[in-house]
Image 1 (cartoon, helix red, strand yellow):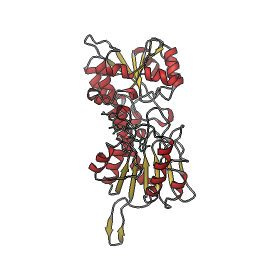
Image 2 (cartoon, protein in one colour):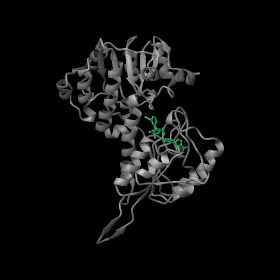
Image 3 (tube, helix red, strand yellow):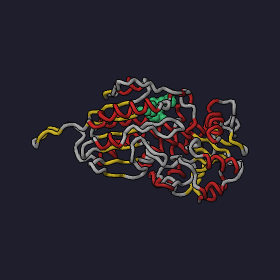
Image 4 (cartoon, helix red, strand yellow):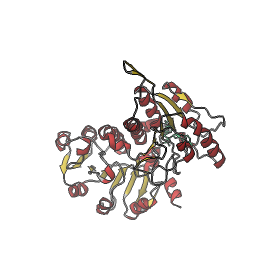
Length: 378
Ligand code: NAD
């Protein structure tokens, strides 16, 4: 089969679904690869590099026309969707649980949709395809750089002839993949770092990175299904918010990453907590989205300075701001999935009895075949 890669430039996207290395890997395993001219440009991959990897470089219409499978990073825009034909396969991070309209449209058009965010991540043989982890890793790193850019003091302890500067104090709320990478990155910049999460397993992971784990007196055990957190009750939530407020006020930088699959992100930083922070502090809300974030008042894609001088950043698509590394790691995930879906005779095999395939397959033959997504659509 033939794999197509399109240029994705909506909403500041700079990543590309296959880099030249991964394209070469895919071609080596059997499929042909067609790339839209310029598709890798914003991640610094040239058309020539794709050609050297053995891919064909064409215009958009020719790629769509020649490809059986389109691989993408984020959801394809309307014009692309309209130009796809029935039976064509689209692979990407489609966020089907929060995009019912898109799912309906993909089904109505008889497109086969495969979404990497529905991968059964706890399966060890799926780990090479775990795009949520690879992109969260990039985002956690980038979030610290964004915070540092907006913070008007040094991160490390510096002793110079002009005096001594105290290290910055960084608090990371939500210690999953992104949070742990943020903790490690802030430590490497010399900050004194604390981390917090509701999953009990996070305690040891935070400590092993040399950060302090924040213990709340109201013990909340938020472990849920599939290695994820569960949604807290109203009571647990307000106890958590109240106790975190005092901790937040003691820190210069707060980075929030908390997510619960298929739910609006939990509020961890209330307006009162924000108001109690010192002037010059920086808050990066990595959960900021149209549905809200972890911080009251954060706005997706915007940077606000509060009345008490706190810079509040509603971070969106941080991986697009480290486009080369994000593309390279995402492309490896895509190549691994394509390999998994390639049958011995070189055709694409979508076996509903295979746990990985069943996990990521969202629509097929005009129907929503993913039970979780179908349930979320009501
Ligand atoms: P995520 O993006 O869904 O959430 C980010 C973090 O927010 C999680 O650690 C979660 O526990 C935390 N969180 C949610 N509600 C919270 C609250 N009210 N207060 C504080 N923290 C809250 O998670 P993720 O990073 O994608 O994955 C979560 C964890 O599960 C990770 O440690 C990951 O390694 C693990 N996991 C492992 C596998 C695997 O074995 N391959 C697969 C899936 C997840």
